[in-house]
Length: 334
Ligand code: TYM
Image (tube, rainbow, N blue to C red; front, side, top):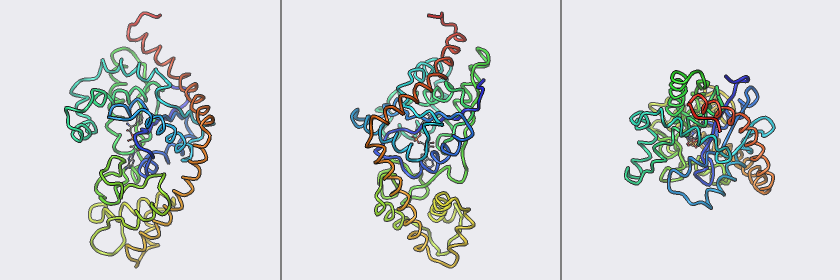
């Protein structure tokens, strides 16, 4: 359907900062893909109200998210960068898609099961349950071809594919069937203190999560204190050396060097050498990232301007898609 290949993705403003997992699992790919594709990147604030939250904090976090995405290299000249609630067509399409989503199908989403188990299923909201349908709408409203995400979003993109195919089958060719774009090497960055769990802002302790707002000292300390494995030789093995494998992955992603190359550099050295060296590298990285973010956050009017322009570009695609969907759905034209 789309005339130019499109890429779309989003990252929730649920914390005061994105973390290193978001950066390597998602943002690095977003930035690389904006050269080749017509890109739509957004801040899913509607998704963030499906768990308990504070409105003033959400507003502030949305600005921080915008500044961090720009600092990561999202270029508003090449990509539409916008806030989800500025494009009402996402929620409108989600309602239509809800009509073709099975209750059991939605109930099989593992992230919902995990999150609702954490909060207790009685306090989990209906919004949290239908969240993947809104995510499908986010993707399908742009006729996106590619969706760069980390491993944890694979099942949600699969649902979007299924809903696109189902709608097309029932109502006629309407949606592009999207594909997840998951870079295997960095699809799951692990918690530094618990290298078999994913790095996540909602992890109980922040000692193993490097936030992009950390000071260089904080970040370096987290790396130096990373939990490592038994043995002392540095090589990559996810099964027997999850801690070292995670550090090697971060090292390789940060320096754009192969894992083999990094392993060769540390041949004959101790774990501590790797941790100190990586701590310094990550420290330098967050220092530069923090500087850029603070500068961008200092000019709210400019952020508002960028987000408003992004929403205008997004709606140029979203409005006609919704119109087509409404027509195919049998709604009388207003
Ligand atoms: P979110 O906000 O949890 O995460 C944003 C992106 O970061 C990736 N990610 C990771 N990648 C590697 N290692 C990690 N430890 C790690 N933690 C997070 C996520 O996979 C994601 O790509 N539902 C989505 C947001 C969303 C969305 C969309 C994404 C809403 N609508 C449409 C794509 C398309 C979410 O909660 O991601």
